Image (cartoon, rainbow, N blue to C red):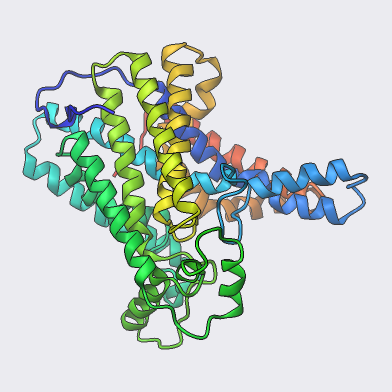
Amino acid sequence: MTDTPSITVPNAPATTRLLSLDVFRGLIMCTLAINGFAFATTAKRVTSGAVAADSISETFWEILAFHNSHPPWNSQFYVLGYSYWDMIQPAFMFMVGVAMPYSYASRRRRGDSEFKLTWHALVRSIVLILIGVFLQTKNSGLSTNALLTNVLSQIGLGYCFVYLAMKLSTKAQIVVAAIVLLTYMTWLNIYPIPAPISETSVRSIQSLSVFPNVAPHFAIETNGAAAVDVSFLRLLLGDETIQPHHGGYATLNFIPSAVTMLIGAIAGSLLRSPVGSLEKIKRLVLSGAICLAIAVMLSFTWCPVVKRIWTPSWTLFSGAYVLWTLAILYWLVDVAGYRRWTFPFVVVGTNSLAMYLMSMLWKRWIAERMEVFWGKDLFTGTYGPTIQAVSVFAVLWLFCFYLYRNKLFFRI
């Protein structure tokens, strides 16, 4: 994108805050907090009840359900298609990366030493991991077979890597990203496949379009990341009965997802650079096209597009769409100046971590209180899940609005 690592310049001039970044973060967090409008749950009620009077209505709700839930395994549809819900975590992690050059430059202008900056990155990494573990285990206890798969833990595990990579030129960062993805893809391809393969793994293989001899290496229970997770958790928790996570999520996802954050950091450095606005948009769009072309090629050969184990092809596939989304929002909000619609998202985007934690910790409690005060009947009908999701989100948004009005911003 640009070969000038602006974040390494100690006295880099301050740049105007880009509203599009807050809007993007706000869109991500609003989607999470509103639980996708609970469309997936509502769709099941609609399509199984009398409400679905015709096939058009049924198809409409099936589409809504698809885009507000994670597909069982394969994440690529009709070559270029995807589920909107699958893109939320990549966008989340990408925006963490985008913010890093801004944070780094701000602290350097403030006079922080290199040691202090590195220490801060390390502490932030550890805190994110611990918060992620707490959120992951709050309902399932320490017996969980997915101890480090929460998005905050994944960010924490890869954060220091991205921080160190930011000190390189953009070309060097791209080379590092390519080496990481190629090495991880090679390891997944050569990891021994256990025999026999379970029926669940066979079903997951059937959805993949890679070479037949490659597919078993990326099955839900036979991939290398799942095997490492089982071995690690059995050793850590002393429980030999632990099996691969039923959803396929793995701790080692942090390796390729760190590249997602690095792509964000490269994009953030580009946005901070003195390059013209239209040139920035051009580079974001072109970079996305290159990522997508490579991802599609890999998806039919050596590496399927699977979000649940964050395959290297998924890193590039999702990276393309989040780069394009950033380009669109940057043009729409900061270049063209269409800002009137952005306020609800800015309120959340400026306190994205607070909204995420509130939605994870308070959502169920708020829903229960609403059932007490308003009665359960409101939430038990065909459209009850969506009504409840919107109602809970309204409470969370109002709390974010209170924080925004009082200039209270939660940071780590």
